[in-house]
Length: 360
Ligand SMILES: [Fe+2]
Image 1 (cartoon, helix red, strand yellow):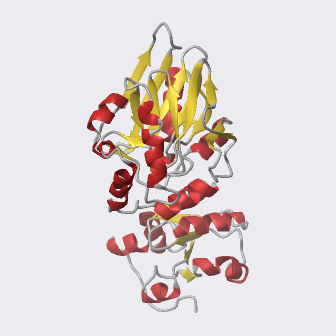
Image 2 (cartoon, protein in one colour):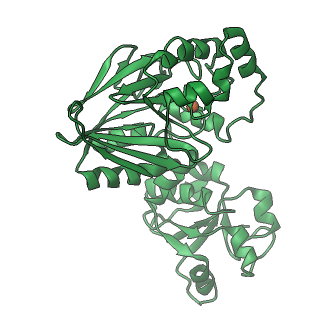
Image 3 (spheres, helix red, strand yellow):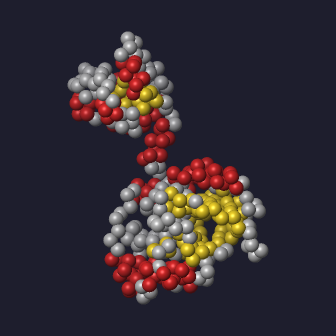
């Protein structure tokens, strides 16, 4: 965390927070005078952190901005916008349907007394922008410290990146501070002059040389590439968000409590195994009824005619069962709960199991 609170005579007092989440860097930037703030490149797992920082500084987040469509992490922009009634800002070529303000090269975003000037810098992606703010430049993934954004992901283009760097960014004042969207070495910031002199990728200044260098990079694909692109481009939920939302609708029962009830005369619970049939036949919690998750809505009326029954759902690892229990609640099974843990953990703990078909 790099916290700077700055006041100079020419510029508006600014609150500037850099938030690290692994190699992903995001920023909370606020106008000290008015309390208006923008969060830049927010990441879904850091939402509480941004909100806490905003509260600590007395800031009101009015905007949330993504410097480009991220392929390696999940943007929190839509979620923050919904929670705080903030506006989402991206470049006009972004395909995300949840963007409220589409900006283009040369436009200014006003945050209280602060002015962020948009530069369209395609190359890493076609919707990449950099933001100039007083003595600094937020470079997104166009320029990194000691590197540049890659150009081999969807909408990337090394020729455009060369143009954005050598004909735009690198022509700015070398004293500008560089704040990128990623850093893999624990750096906080650099200066444009330092990067021009030392950044290895920028030493290949000729277009053909630069493009060849970028095409020769043989980088691994980001781990969550397809999921990140799906959610960041569509505004859809991540799988973990879906499970998280479901977990807010239900309560849970520990494996220990389930086992204790199995051994009591009147357990008061009905166990429901939602794994695939083969897994169920190979071993399940004694007495559990089986309905595979995919069949749940179709079979629930005949298999579970009493919606007041206290149904304890379990699966392999506790995720599908959470979704299934939430579905049952939506269907009116108001006492449906999920087991805290799954059959794998149940077996590991040495609790009893039986094979075959107990449902008959
Ligand atoms: Fe990126």
